[in-house]
Length: 97
Image 1 (tube, rainbow, N blue to C red):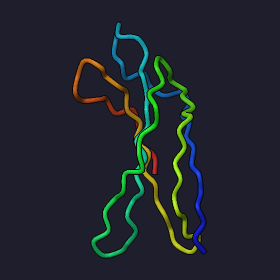
Image 2 (tube, helix red, strand yellow):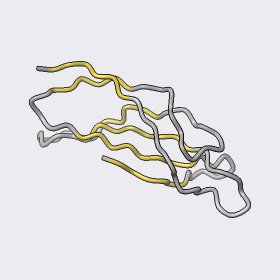
Image 3 (cartoon, one colour):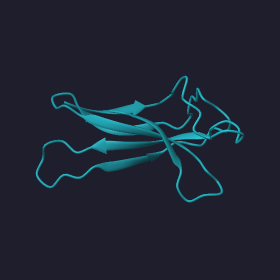
Image 4 (tube, rainbow, N blue to C red):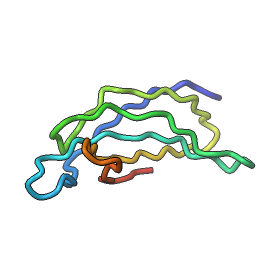
């Protein structure tokens, strides 16, 4: 049975990745549907949340909808990053599967 489910995310007590004297991190999450054991299946990026400025316990408003098959194992990877406006590479803050 396949159902459409809506996912929302929050984090608490993140480590500040901004660095000394640079304020507090500006976290956002990237949500990826991990490919199941199907041949040639690739991870699918579902999207990213909004950036929440100066926050170590964000509760993101953006939600993600995904078709979920209750008869199969499904893995979702959530990577949290700190937005660095002056650099091209945002800093990783953590990951959960």
